[in-house]
Image (cartoon, rainbow, N blue to C red):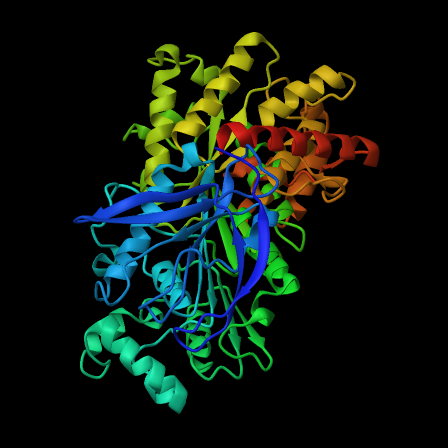
Length: 586
């Protein structure tokens, strides 16, 4: 499917609405792909694969052309420079207003998104990193599609795969409308000469004649606190699309505390080369890519809540809390925001036991609450599932060939997504044999089946370190069950790599919080010191929710250390292992 693209640059003067747009012509990788039909009418899209070609699933821009809703062509794609940033671009044909009234245009575009998502594997697209973008009328439609996920009147029934969602992870609108109920009062005389007939064709009447339809067609009417990040680009001298339209959408986003950026082009009119300069397109592409690669579209702008489900190799060393710390901050996933973690489960158990209504939880749930209740009732962004090599290979009662473990994990993934969160696989298994290796393969296959986007390959990284550097002891000499200080550091590096999709090298602290690994004799000998440390311990929010026996370990005051050379080696292994697995789990 992949082949090289021959790029030619040219300027096109587009006169439908009196606007000028710079268009970069290119040969699509796949041209005129039928994505849906309405009666005898076939709807098509062009797919451009990134340059250079890659075998990794690509983030994808769904491009919506402009033309006052009544004209224009999918051939007009002024953002093809984004191919150089690793994006695929699908330029979508939709029914124009002389052919079909609103909301047909939105129905068509959403059908294209569903088609691309259902064919993502064969087209080499990443279905979790779709971005919708457009210019002028296309900017309006892009914004409307992006903020209206799940709105029945706008989803429509065009296309054949209604099981696929039409949501996106980002929106980019170049000088588009946002409020059809206010646009005419904001327009210049020239703007009115364009907008009045255009709206008549689109809606079948004027906004004041059809207020409910005009509201349905207005992105500002659909903005809520779960909408994806938004980039707006508008000229302050636009004679055709009032700049106040972008201001209104920005303000609606700000009211819901959603991420939004308004780029005002000084002296900019309605389109033109200055909107698509290399510097501007490069900056937008980098910002969008960083946003959609860091997490799903529902991440809160101020905090990120993680729930960890598992037994001792999950809670040891306060790992959930430490993971939240390393993915926060300027270099982490949430970039200056606050990540918090909670823990749920019981010690020494496969997490499949949480399906038992009589499960005896040891931590993390309220009286009468189950794991599934907690997922449903509390607002988490990610739920981390401890997927264990030995359990997926069949260890444990009533778990032949690991099927019960696999089934439970799949149930959890579905419940997590229904609650609006994302599942995360924490690949766990510290053994070195062939059975452990087979378990890792099974976990990766389970991740593929459940379309898991964040996969933390701790067991795989441990296996590589043990082969290359047996002098690095990942487990403590007194404890062959839990991660030691170096094993804990490697796990943190794996979580950082998987969540942020950035290399952790040089970014993790060389001194860090750990739990002690006392022998029985050491614990007796140090009992006085232990009690003194616990009495002085001031737990943070995460630690205050732990059972007392966990807080005693946390309050022992132990610190792990690692040399910079060993830290950089483990950070590099974590990053390389995570990168290598993207091709098999994305």
